[in-house]
Length: 74
Image 1 (cartoon, rainbow, N blue to C red):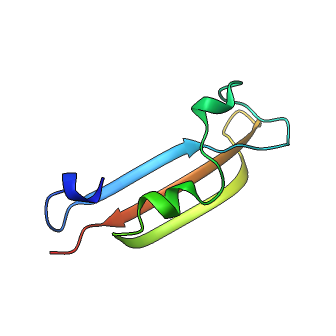
Image 2 (image 1 turned 30 degrees about the vertical axis):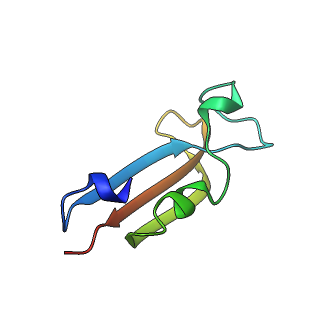
């Protein structure tokens, strides 16, 4: 994945996270990432922001999300 970014390019990603909690999003775990997956995917990038958390969406529902902002070096 890192090689597909231009030098200095950014990867911005938000994915539903596998969770034991009752959360919104895909019911099939194949469409969710496991904790630590985004960190592994971005291991060759400079990670500016990484969050894995249960968050309340604007409608008041709980979502398990993984968020990442990472950059390829120049």
